[in-house]
Length: 200
Image (cartoon, rainbow, N blue to C red; front, side, top):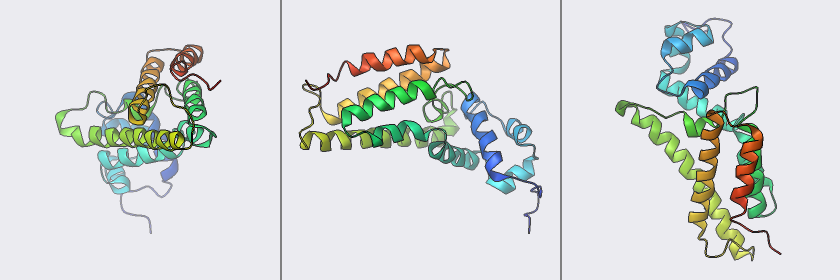
């Protein structure tokens, strides 16, 4: 039975894709319920029936983003046989993804909580926790790589190195939002990799 208030033709996956693009382009705070209902082609009661609230919809959007459009960057890091190779693949994938012409620029997880109000701190905290988890995953891999004999940059500690490359990713996302093209972001990636010389 179709829940009351939700159209029979409701396509949840399509709705999530449209909501993802809207939050990605505008950020959480600037995206209103009326923006969402217009983009999804449903009424406010239908939105609340389907997703519960704007906050709940956004949480589902971020999960959807990380499993789809945002998955390639993390996958590039995970697939590479070395930690250094993973970072290089991650940054080069980000340069391509953050400037792809068929999607909003940058990374939703990095940019969506900009300009949140004080009563939206939960949204900011959730995205901050997701970014912190990414840093922790990088640091864990660097620790394991060093234990296996893979050289890290001279004097680098795993967490500081992870925080550095996370900051590079965040900067690349912002540059993409400011209009930087793929070539510029690839130069940023190459410059960042100079901090981790290839083993001779």
